[in-house]
Length: 114
Image (cartoon, rainbow, N blue to C red; front, side, top):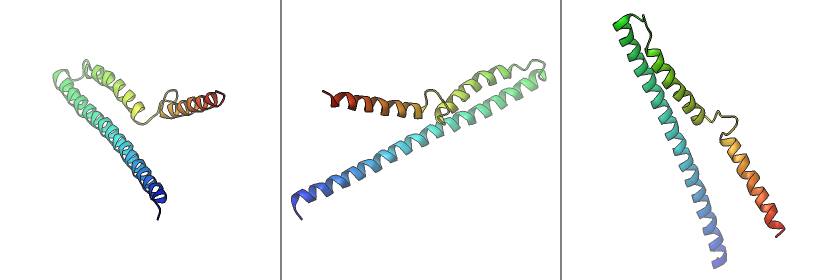
């Protein structure tokens, strides 16, 4: 085996390893995002339930003040879910990917003519 063929093989193995590492890192980041969301959702359910119980035992829901906390925190949960599950149709990850590819294509075309 020549040195040249060894370098090509070695380079391909490095690229495969790097690609696997990148996939692992992206998967790990995704798992961390999901853990944070589910942790936030669990906290929401537990805390709001506790506030509802306190509200019930103090005034039997004559004034359901716990709903203000549920509503405020609920808005945050909705936005967290949109980000975590890429539900934003306007500026989500798919939109970002399309724009990056478009700009790279434009840049490639512009550099051809220089």
